[in-house]
Image 1: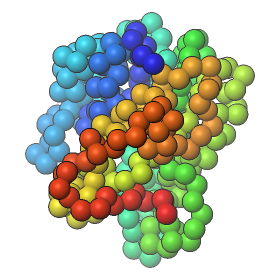
Image 2 (image 1 turned 90 degrees about the horizontal axis):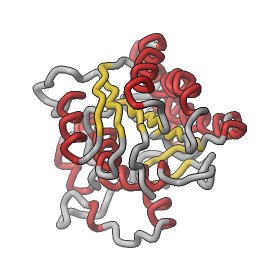
Image 3 (image 1 turned 60 degrees about the horizontal axis):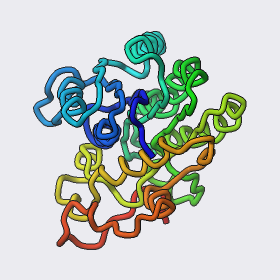
Image 4 (image 1 turned 90 degrees about the vertical axis):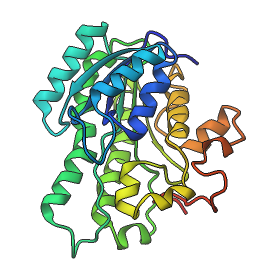
Length: 274
C-alpha cells in the first residue's frame, strides 16, 4: 500500500483534488509530475505548478512541474516523454483536469461545450494514449480518471446535459480502456466523490464559499485515489468508484475527519449520485 518510487503523471495538479493527490503520493516518496496550465499566480486561485512542486518536495517526494494544455496532443506526448526521461518511466496517469459549466443546451455557448469536451472527455483519450507506451513497461500500471458512475436518470441531463455528456464520456472510456488494456496488465478506473468537495470549481460554479460548510476536503479523494493506485495485479479495474466505497473496502469507517466544517449542516451529495 505504498507508492514509494512510483511515478505519477497528474493533470490539473496545481490546485484542488489534483494537488491533494500529488501530496498524498509524495508522502510515500513518489515521483510526481505536476501537469497543469497554471504557471503564474492567479489573483483568485491559489496554486501553480511550481508551488505544488515545492510542496511535493517538502512532503518527501520528487517533483517535475510541467505547464501543459491537455487539449494539445503534441504537447501531451512531449510532456509524457519528458516525465519518463526524468524518472525512468511512468506508473500511473491521473486524469484530473476538468472544465465545468452547469447550463442546459438552450443557454450553453457551443465554444464552452467544446472546451468541456476537450478537457474532460477528449483529454482522457489523448493523455491515456500518450502514457500507454510507458504504462506498458510498468510493473503495475494505472489510469485513474475523475469521473462519475453512469446514472442515466433524466434529472442529470435536464439542466446540464452538455456537462453530463462530457463527464460520462470519461467514464465510458474508462470502462473501455480497462478491457482494451487488459492484455497489458494496466488497471483503469474512475473515481468520484460521495459529497461535494471544497474546490475552486465548486466555489465558483455553485455559489461561493458558503457551500463549503456542507462539503468535504479534497483529502478524502486523495486517500481514495491512493488506495486505487497502490493496488496491484488489476485487483481493482473497470470500476466507477465512489470515494467512500473504496475507503470502506480498505477498512475506513470514520469520515468525519474529512469535513470542512465539523459544525456544518448535512453534507451535500455530489452530482450524479442519488
